[in-house]
Length: 115
Length: 112
Figure 1 (tube, one colour):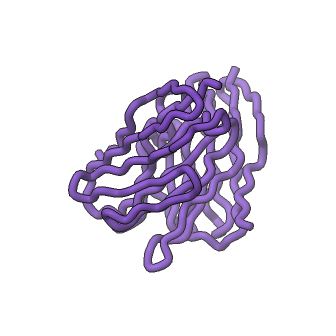
Figure 2: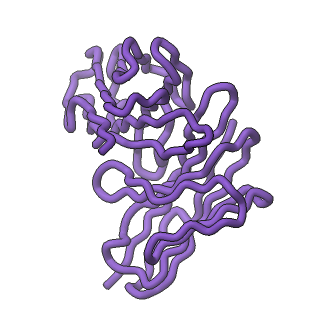
Figure 3: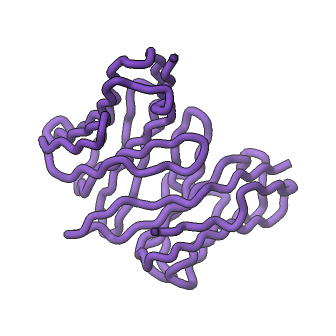
């Protein structure tokens, strides 16, 4: 079974703190994605990566950065957490689409509260 | 900006009813369209659609893609309370790298 694991289920951080959210997948997937989910807004793409050390901005990258030093691990960094970054964060991974199209697999989510 | 739009945003029906959820997309370099179900945790995969006009089916759920209309529908027949969830539509497209973009979701509530 594919496994996408996020390091924390719940996190409470203070305004201004640097926050690291970690995501690890065990299927050798090329693509990895970070989303945030807020009521009424669906899943919004923050950043994604298609290979080691490669990254692309998604639709809402402001206030975030990412790191992908190894293929299996994709980290989301909040450089200076703010209360408007309180949200559910979801990581996903997938193979590159092609002849063997596959779906994206999700981690269990991290509910981050910034106080 | 590429956009995935779902309708309705929310829907409340009685158990046993049939529902149709809509998803439209507006992009070139389309690769595939995906449907997910989300209850209280991570989204779980339902269907992937790549070819127009071919229905995918799993039990009471089915989905079809219309590439001409840039849209897809998800049908659920004989709904049950366990179908209550947020249903998410997403699109893979390729602009050199592959981006997976989601719609806002449809919140479906089934009343016993």
